[in-house]
Length: 469
Image 1 (cartoon, helix red, strand yellow):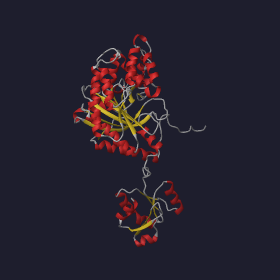
Image 2 (cartoon, rainbow, N blue to C red):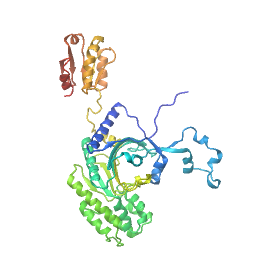
Image 3 (cartoon, rainbow, N blue to C red):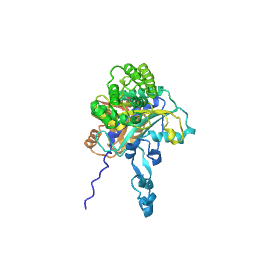
């Protein structure tokens, strides 16, 4: 019987040495920017208690959680009667899941971070700035740019309501993508404005329906958004208000001014929305900070931006690549009471999350990785004979101490074979040394252009200079 062909689950990927070197280039770039803004790294477990995860992402998010069966034989441990709930009704669906699953794989890094803050609050100094680079899992339908396992690179600051924090997140986004060579557009809105929009339509209870519909504006167009809003129970006056707002043109200041009139009773029903006005005040302040900071990538207010996570309460962000067609590659927002769910109320935070896998796809598509990003070995020392190997070992050790990636070919093989090895691994420098070099205390180095120089074996500085040109 033939063995099954090895495979991996749909929505996951293997990464070989070249891909990992390129991914680490992304991680190292993001990590270095996080640190320049004073963020400290933490990690949390891959699995959390389901009680931590459920109910934090909305009904759709709950459906996408990967649940972990209790260890052993959880179904075998149940007796026949345990499958029956109240009134003798059989346990099924969520009720049965609770009996056999107590843990799940994390859906994002923000909810585990809130749990971490509450659990370790006595050890932390607030405002607390943390970053986290770890994988998350979602039971989504795999497609281009959408995976079931993917890495997020999060930065959050918690314990401060100042919008200077939002500004610095915009600056972090700007610096990361500038260093990676990706042109991006940063879009900003405010959940309070979305709440105010529902209020001035006369349907404050429809804020989720309105949010879900207008979030599709880029995909389905304004007419289809209006049809969907109607199907969700809004009357024509409410639809007209939304159309008016989504059709606003002009600068950020002009849009805010027009919105302020509408939120202050200027819409069809004359309703004043204090919530919406507060959101506009926050946007106005944030954009005044952004204008003063003058980031290199454009930042715009987008009134159709309606990120769906339930815990956002203030500013919301979305970042898209300008030169590559893919979904958002970074996003986040302000949350005022996420820690309150775990027993620590009134602890406001704000954060962003970089989608490393989508950023990787963008960089591959745009050919943005530096040529040497996947280079781990800079020089290959050929193995000519035992005496040459013994002579070269101290030299190789000293070069490694100076951060130069070195390999010594492990076997005494034909020169052609060792040349082929260097070529296949894209090792740019080679070093061939035999009996004459050992006797003269020299080391030969040849660069990618075929230029060879000889150095005394103690001239490590000279070798480093040659190898790093």
